[in-house]
Image 1 (cartoon, helix red, strand yellow):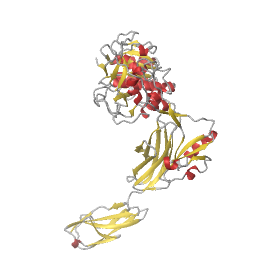
Image 2 (cartoon, one colour):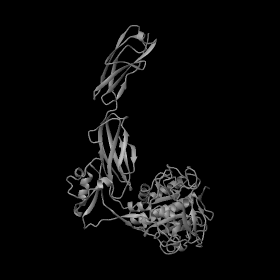
Image 3 (tube, helix red, strand yellow):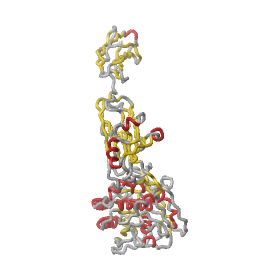
Image 4 (cartoon, one colour):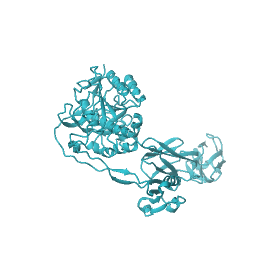
Length: 559
């Protein structure tokens, strides 16, 4: 029977550390009783007067135009929404946003091992803690069982043991307890370490034995059990090399009930798919370093490893004897699950798949995963976003004739943040820009006639807004009709070749090429065979007034 092994490296060390923290800013809301300050971004060359015409706002800081490409205005709170919408519809305006105030708002726990927990600081968990610590959320841990060690006191719910088929999922190997402590270890209690979601509950589901192995049937049962017991988040720090309809079916069962399955990509330093991580509905996790590189042992692949997280984290020993480094994709996975739990506590009605989408889109970009490295502060902030982004196509102007390489510019904003802006041509994504101001240098040369050009803004929740214009593209030379002796003919006397050239923009030049060199111009050309070799070629080249060029077929003659 196929076995599925846990994926980890763990060492236990009884070394205490001094707690310390790092500062991350978080947005603060404006007082609705006071005038609202708006920052109005301007496209290059646009004056503040033109951009603000008709908006009935008062300029507060005109100097920001040269310093930040924007002008600061204020407006009565009751009119802020309507003024914002009016300004966003102005094609001269690149963006409009409230002049947010930032302040130090992250939480620094007093746990002795906090100084060692670089991974949580790397992914901005302290910023997320300023919004929630995860009350009301349960994470199912499918592993070797979970023991209620000191940092998990009051966190572990009754669960089930599918190895021994009883209701006592004790951890006799240690891996599951380490995983659970990364997710839900008590934080800010002046003891031990801080879990990502220190107010979460753990549903222990034992599917791996004392050697860290379990068959696919036990794991499939565990997935279904977790979904049936209301867990919207299922952590599986385990991996196997074989795909399986049994696992596929169990994951689909959980997904259909609103759960998100999160699984380790494995530790073989390979792009070879591992399961259940590579199942499409599963959020697959790789292990990243403190510099956002890839740990040499982490599996990778932009087609199946969805997201990364720090791969070495402090965890508690399953016998409660101490704390140590817990390294591997088994450690990265519960960090992601803990962030997902914080998000779910902010939006309890969200489905697991929606949480997975926001986690992915709000990540910080990396090259060896599909989406990037988890960003907890951004993800927890973004999950409550209910507004679609706004987007306007500012250039080229309507009626512009497209020819050659053109600049397509867009103004796009979102009340929480944008994942990306896409350039879409005739329904196909041609380019992506992730940094404002959004602009694309696009070669229109492959298009002629009517072209639909769109800019599509996508926010961190996956909401989309599109602005589209139809343009005419002209990237073809004149149409040519040539009257000449049949190619391949033998000619001895002089003969005349004629051409009719037509173009909507007008024809600027017609050239006659003999043997590849210009031999004459105009709409007719007299060919004297004696001037050329025993075999020679004749061809017409024509230019329109935009510089587009076209060629006739090549005529070959003998004499």
